[in-house]
Image 1 (tube, one colour):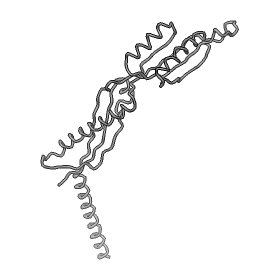
Image 2 (image 1 turned 90 degrees about the vertical axis):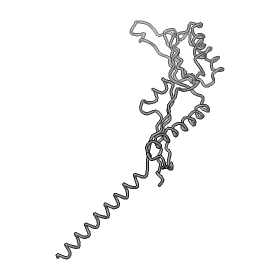
Image 3 (image 1 turned 90 degrees about the horizontal axis):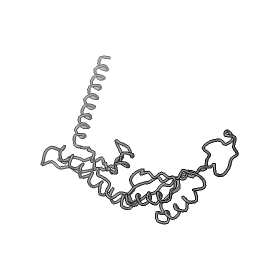
Image 4 (image 1 turned 180 degrees about the vertical axis):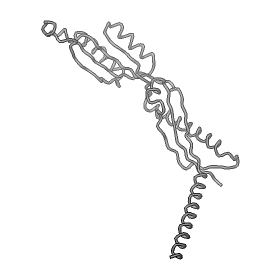
Length: 215
């Protein structure tokens, strides 16, 4: 029985020693790696605008608004109608009146992308000349998809350069080198959310870079 007890103690001690060695090996291995976040943020260059264009008014002026919108859509084919409704502001029977066509109101909304503020101003001027009830709001930043892809590639490169600067600082010894083993693109709207970047006309690129230190 004593021999069995002694053998178990030896086995337990060996297991503890082995686990300790494995932990040290893992710790040593972790010390051979660095991981950083690279970032690059800039004002969106030469960006256009996303506009919300709405008509809210009497039924009798709808055709006048629609005729103008049709002509604008020839110039800006990416316009998209997002809302169209006909409604009454009150129940006529509650006022002791019968329903007639001139009681109806119309609401129509379009999303419009324009290249610059000059186009926005021209649309506003045209509407003001027509005496149509409307609203025209800037809703964010618009960049041509092909141009946006090009800008994103450039910004990713600069975010990686930022990560390399951090790695050079963290590795300490000037003679020591490292090898990048993985690059992962991260959420580019953290921490403020997409609205911050849309309305402040900014773009952000973030990457996670993992590197192995060389001997």
